[in-house]
Figure 1 (cartoon, rainbow, N blue to C red):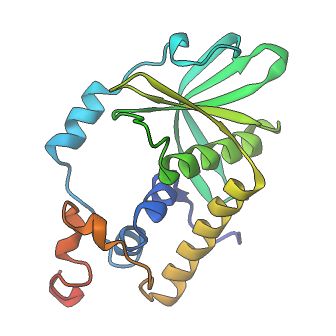
Figure 2 (cartoon, rainbow, N blue to C red):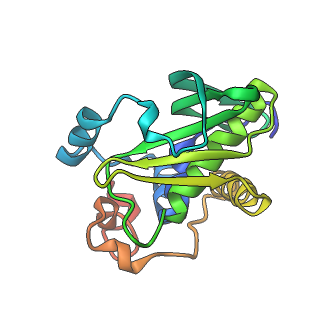
Length: 198
């Protein structure tokens, strides 16, 4: 990352793996979804972190909540829901989701988001982060994420792709038609009105 590059919010990395059109619309067209009732509900319902959200085997020394992280080297910033300081100096980033884990496991977008936070924790705290936890409030699901090189590579790939989006202003070729039906951005994306009308 060069000195003049802006820092992307970690949420953009998450959205990149949901649908690449969303970060393009945000970064290049400067169009953002207005706050919806479900967003307000999620924010109001967002839980304070409790140790019982952790799986057995993570022994808590202390917990920081709403941890602001800035990683100039990585090119990201964001607010991590909780950072657990565990025994033996282990740092365990945790994200709380107002949804259900379900049988299919954690979605890629959540895995990559937590990995981005882990990489920020490493940059800020100067310690290797091996694992983190996603807690799903609707069903009490807990998913331990091990931060393998493949997940870290996905974070770097998203940041690089978003930088290219900003530089070239070219929309991404990939689209997720199965996600379009319930997406607010569908009104300005692909089959919606042209960008000049925004």
